[in-house]
Each structure stands twice: as C-alpha cells, then as structure tokens.
Image (cartoon, rainbow, N blue to C red; front, top):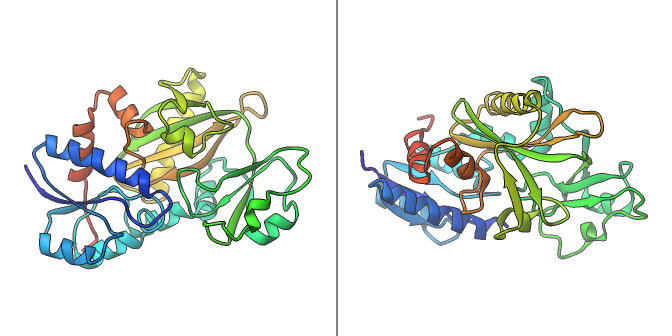
Length: 305
C-alpha cells in the first residue's frame, strides 16, 4: 500500500554528507515501490512545521550520527506521534554511547574490548592505557575521529587537544583488537550474513567506508563455520539486548592469530544506505533488493504512542 513518507536526511552531524547520499538512495527505492516521498532536512529552518503540515503516515529516518541516531530525533517524532523507522529513543541513545553499549552487551555474555572514558585533554597529555589502543569519540559513527595509537608510540595523538577538534571533549580509550574486520546486518530478528571487510587504508576509516574502492567486501566471509555462526548469533543478541528494531549492523574483530576470540566493537542502529554500504549489500546477497529492503524498513516503522 502506498504511503506518504517524510524522509529525513542530511542533518547536523559530521556524517551529514553520508546521510544525504543514504537518504537520496532510500527515496529512490521507496518511490520505486510506489510511495509518496517528501525529503526533509532537519538542518533547515522549520523542519518540524514541514512534517506537521505534511501529515505523513511515517517518517523514514535516513540520518546518521548525532541528532539522527542518538535518540533525540526519535524523541521529537514520538512527541509528534509519527511512526518512524529503525530503533526507538532508548535503544538509539544507548547504542550511540559506545561504552554503555559494551556494559550491556558484556552482561549478555559477549566479548567487548576494555576501555575507559576520559577528557580529550587528559588523553592528549599522556597514555591512559598501554599501547596499542584506540582513541575515539564515544558518541560518533562512521569511524569519524578515530585514532589508533600503535605500540611504541612516544606520545598520544596531539590532535585530541587541538582547538579544531570537532567531536566533543569526551573520548573513549579502548584496547586495540588486532585481526580481521567482520560485520553482520540484522533485519528484525534475522541475521543476514557475515562480511569480511578488507580496507585499502590503514584501517576501516571514513574513506574506506564511503570512497568508491576504499575497501574490499568478501561475502560471505571466508572464515571457519564456528566463527561465522558465533558472529551471526552475537549480532542478533546485541540487537535484542539493546532493544533495537528494524535494521542494525554489528561490527566485530576476529583475533585469528591471537586469542582466537570474536570481539564485538559496536552496533550501528541506522546503517549506511549508500552504494558502498554493507547492510544493503548483505540484503542483496540474501535476495532482498534495495527497494524491497527500504519498503520493509518503512513497514516496520512504529512509535510508542
């Protein structure tokens, strides 16, 4: 059944440009399934008034990062009593906080790297953890602001104390997990498959995620069946334990040459929907075309009311 959809894209976060691409791709897919789609950018004035005037059947949230997948936009849509896609207020806010996410998932029996929250100025002054470790914003996505401190580094990254640092003062210092990069998308209660990501940059950073040819995706991943099954099960567990709905994607490291463990790094409650994004690629591998995927996401929209 055709629906009037307010599609939210762009927004205010450092991931704005990715969101614009995700949103436009989702709009094309939804229109291909016969929906009436109106694109609304919350960075523009009077966007709430535009939604009210539109009186949509649902809001399709194609925003990324802060003010997109951290519970705040979800709270606005709850107040407006408009069904919306992806996870609700609590799950979105919790999953955006990497350290709190790990605390919940450890209770569910999943392996998550040790870490601590610190001021970026303290983290720039001295090593707060033996290298190698990762310093990254606790509440950003798309690997923005991620810095890897290698073994033998004399000093922490000076960028953390720079006046130009745009990612807030709270930093997560986390043990670096070596190994192979794996990811699993979950639709509802179903894990799709496991992809191994082989970035062409130093690690799976913003460029590797979104630049054409920035990484090689092998799906299904060529890994032992027990590791494959563990990743699939862990992704569903993370989705369920955080109270997520719709589409999510969980990222892992498999330390093949070390302790052999599978480590869950984080869960993304609104995975990218660009031409190079992993979740749509996994759906296509499972026989779910992009228009069908976004149509399913739209049908899954709800709010607390």
